[in-house]
Amino acid sequence: MNARAITKARLTDETLDVLVIGGGIVGSCVARDAAMRGLRAGLVEQRDFAFGTSSRSSRLLHGGIRYLAQGKIGLVREASLEKTVLHHIAPHLAAPLPFVFATYRENRAWKLWQLMFGVKLYDLLCGGRNLGHSAWLDAAETLQTVPGLRAEGLAGAVRYFDGFTNDARLVLDTLRSAAGHGASILNYARYRRADREGLWRVEVEDGVTGERFIIAAKTVVNATGPWAEGLGPSAVKLRLTKGVHLVVERSRLPVTDAVVMTDGNRVLFAIPWGERTILGTTDTDYAGPLEDVRTDGEDVAYVLAITNAHFPNAHLNATDVISTWAGLRPLIASSKGGPSDISRSHQIRNPEPGWWDVAGGKLTTCRLMAEQTVDRIVAAEGMKAMLCETDLQPLLAGEPGFSGLLPPEVRREAVTYFCENEWAVHLDDIMVRRTSWHYYQRDARATARQVVRWMSECLGWDAAKGEEEMERYQAMA
Image 1: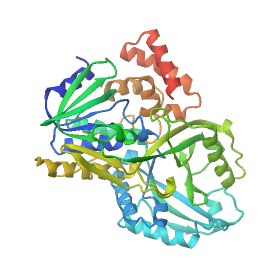
Image 2: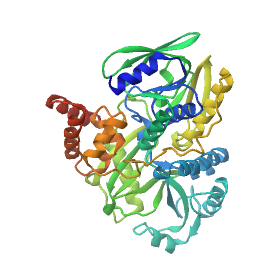
Image 3: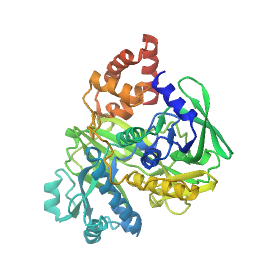
Image 4: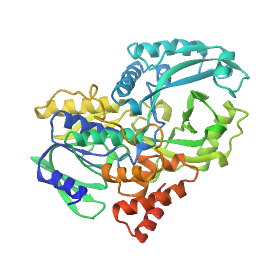
């Protein structure tokens, strides 16, 4: 039996305590938490792990300093503490990152004196254990710290610390940890329907073989992000907003600290990423297809315009853009305010016995969302379970291998590892989510051609299958 067949047999041969639908960051954390507490846990994902929102973020672990201006102190404290937890349990995926937030006299939405007070409060909300100490910079110090920043009208800046991560790698390493604690994990396994007859009986379709099978579970957790409204008896109501990111050569915008760029009361970032710089993000309502969220010319023009306004000598244009990504924020529905005003808090609901919806939230609070979800399941179902230790135990027991903040070197050993140990089924699984080579490499197409050859050797693909994978990759990525 191959690995997928073994996993399906495990999923169908026993009654699970917790079946998670959705292989994003929240679902992976729920599976890990449940397995670490001694519960029989399984997880199925309709596409690849981290296919949706969880591989399309700004890659930041942050309390959200702008939420202080909105008075959301509880949300900021919650996320601020969690970013330090992730730094503790996964230091290879949670590095301290300094941010410079410059203020300009013409922008009344962000006043220097308010930010000076805010960053000190920010440090306190981390329990005094932020990833670095905040500071205040006058105009000259700001320009020395961020060369090339617009000097005209500059009042000064604050410098504070949040964290940088690799969102897709965080999902995959969490799933590796969940599997190591006994959870059964399967991607390309689409939820079809669910019926409750004492137990939940969930029909799933294997996207590789087309086979349908039934998983029996005492409880089901709907952690499908943007897809959550349409699943089973879900009570989730979402407002989806789109965020877009651009990647340029670091030589075109050589920032060493992340730089906060403002557009009225909105904030965007220029984020250092090895030999690249990430620019973004947008925040606009979205009503298009969930499976195919794209960056359009208007998105690119907007982000470049804001960046050029802050770095007037950069003269960035569309030809400087190496790659882009676009994703959806599955925010809890609210008709009040614009997209940037919607709360990033999360919601856990139990609309029917044994069915749990977990939605909303932020990448930074993924572990806490999972802990609270499993706590409620254990209490409601009267399950015997150990206490949560996901905030104490390292994410990985051994070396991280090919997992890190930057893409690994393009080589055969990495590709073989992903195929044999990290559930890689298609070319885009490796190019986009396990490595970020698609976003990082100048000639991603040439890299993909080489990866296809290595995957063919590892997985037994013939020439026709290799070409099919190249076409799939080009269409999706």
